Amino acid sequence: VKVATLSIGDELTHGEIVDTNAVHIAGRLYRDGLKLQRHLTVGDNELDIVEALELLADKADAVIATGGLGPTVDDITARAAARLTGRRLMLNDEALAHLKRFMGVQDGPLLVLNEKQALLPTKCTVVPNPTGTACGFMVIHNGRFLFFLPGVPSEMKRMLDETVLPFLLERRRSHRFVGTRVLKTFGLAEAELDDLLKGMATPEISVGFCVSFPEIMVKLRAEGESGEHLDWLLANAAAAVQEKLKGHVYGEEDDTIDTVVAGLFRETGQTLSLAESCTGGMIAARITSQPGSSAWFREGMVTYSNEAKSRLLGVPPDLIASHGAVSSEVARAMAKGALQSSGGDIALAVTGIAGPDGGTPEKPVGTVYIALASRAGCHAKGYRFSGGRDEVRVLTAFTAMDWLRRHLQSRSSAPPAGGTAQVS
Ligand code: ATP
Ligand code: MG
Image (cartoon, rainbow, N blue to C red):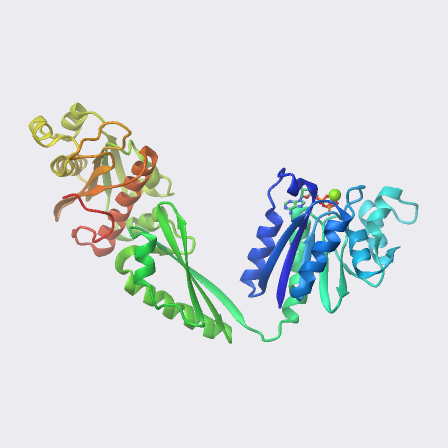
């Protein structure tokens, strides 16, 4: 079933409100495997509405229009629908009864203004509105189903779910099942992902990417004959992606790096301390955003100055003088110092140049060192992140979380592989 959507309202064409109805309907259609073919927006103008409906109904099997069903003069959708289909507007008994029930009037007269909401094209089917006064309706025009729903998002959503979608799904020619699975990745660029996953798509599985800085979602979508077939297709595809992307997939669906890391700490019983410089506590904030984190998070120090790095973490001033505060050596010393003073299992340290000032030719803005110390040893790695101050800080904090994930997952202290350009 090919579906088109039409949003009606001057508020939309004047740019006063965001067309959330169109987004919502598109998402629901997609989820149910119905094909959204095209979408139009028009103002509260009868001729524009008629023309838009004509255009959309020409190619689609069904059109879902929202807006303009209310009682005010600018609500002219019903009139446009009548004009398009060559019908008259008539007081619809069902819609009138609903209106009276909704307004708490039993027999008496309604305000003319309100009664207008029950004026619908002849030979239409009423789409019940459980939460509002204006009923929706459906007319068949040249074999196409034209649905008209109110613009109010909450009303529209229920009517879509309870009447329109069930109607369309029933009429779907072949019953195909559609499902999606989202894998969350960090550390590879979109082009790298694309390259690694080349050839994964099949007629039954499509692969898409969705960038949400600093991570990238890999979206798998499958169409199958049955629910089980679908699950099988998606499970196989997800396993294939995991294998191709090695450790770069950190979670699925609603996972975030923070929830995944929290889960690993909970599982392993390890404890953490942090020594942060350029992130100023962002890593600690991510760790403590998770309920229960007091069980694994011991402490975090924001050692921004050289003096604090020495006084609180025992980093030798000589080391800072000879290598610079932003160096692999100092990052290691920070992590070791934090491990020692806290007595925990893992200590992670970051030091970097977030910019916009402070860069040098050898260590430009975006140069960041991360170190992780545990009883098994200490290792550090340099990164050169691109972007402004905000991006560098977010990337550093996210990368640090990813180090924790990888460390806890492997329970070894090998540095995480691949990813962003290495400095040393
Ligand atoms: P009412 O009975 O409230 O008049 P209606 O069917 O006439 O409903 P509109 O008057 O077009 O609908 O819109 C009612 C309200 O719903 C608008 O003020 C707006 O806030 C919201 N709305 C309308 N269309 C959309 C849309 N496409 N996306 C998001 N919100 C919308
Ligand atoms: Mg209105």
